[in-house]
Image 1 (tube, chains in turn orange, yellow):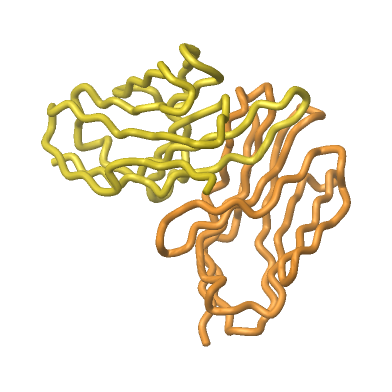
Image 2 (cartoon, one colour):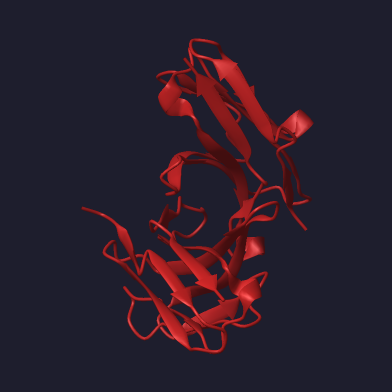
Length: 115
Length: 115
């Protein structure tokens, strides 16, 4: 069975600091997809990124970047120069056809960015 | 605008009183699912549907029913709600593309309290 672990329950940083949210997954499958979602205080779930298991290229989108390393089964998320609006709960998730396309979520990391 | 719409957003009900939470998507997605979010437990899939008239259990289906009579709608039915079903519920939809897993779009959530 697949498992996603987000060991950091809560992180607090001061605005403009860089912060990395860790995500480690377990699977025996060779084909799978990893996701990050953001849940702001308003409660909705916002899609951030999708990465398939055959694409280990890092991705950058503005202040957000993702580092996917199959060797360590990790898919970490870095926010550069954090802002108060980045305060949210961030979820890492795993999915593939073997899981019925269900999203297996980690428990989430609550990020608080203070001015 | 592409969206997943859930209703109601908030609901307080009494034990045993049947209720339905509606979910509708306008993206012509084949795959729809329901998740519940609980503190400390994260997000867990309740039921999913890969197409009209095709539904299957997720990780926590007990106490819930679903139906998929139309492609756009996927209601969640609680025939006899109990207090342990107090939770935040999310409906999600995604397209089914052979050979890949696409991102899921989530509704705004329904906060259900059963007293």
